[in-house]
Image (cartoon, rainbow, N blue to C red):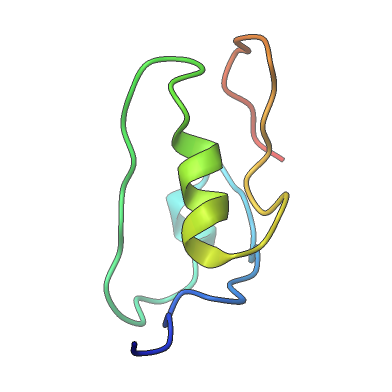
Length: 65
């Protein structure tokens, strides 16, 4: 089985200002869904890093970290 290219991903930054985002460097993946639908858990499982995307048992307002 080939190695997972997402394994070991790391958080870079969070900003509401699109001008502060890093330059494009490859493919991008988006997750969309309702609150507490498992988007963050799916991302954590794909990259193999516990806690990369924050999770909660209760729905929250979106936040910038």
